[in-house]
Image 1 (spheres, one colour):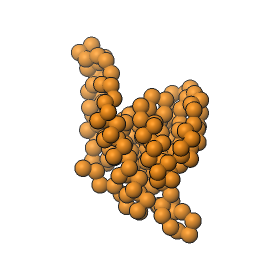
Image 2 (tube, rainbow, N blue to C red):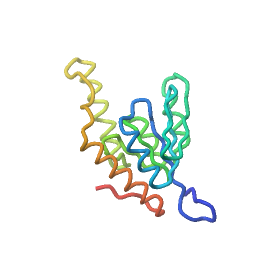
Image 3 (cartoon, rainbow, N blue to C red):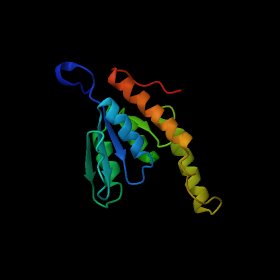
Image 4 (cartoon, rainbow, N blue to C red):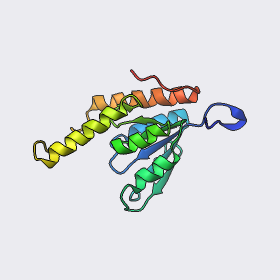
Length: 166
């Protein structure tokens, strides 16, 4: 079911941000300010709110997956979720939300299974000491791709359709 604006007009699009370690908050605020979307900033501790868009900070408990639970319980078909957490992405995709990773990678019903499998494999390899470290640092190209993907998703949802990612 679409969340329509007053008078049944354009769908209301909201952006949910798994914010504690999100490296693309500035890009999210830029798109939200330009498109009029509300941003839900969900974190385990207080963060500064942006002034260039409508936003609300939700500080959740330190409990395991508290931010994930809050987002997954609310995100739906006209919403965008920004997260690097593949398990949260899976939960939100199952609720028909549009999910985008910080590098601009969309998580879709077709891609989430392989993302979960890769996550599990990498965890096993880390546990065995075969690989170490975390993700590569964000590049300007990653941020640019994220900005383009987020803008594409928001514009499609506002037009009442699902985004088609390339």
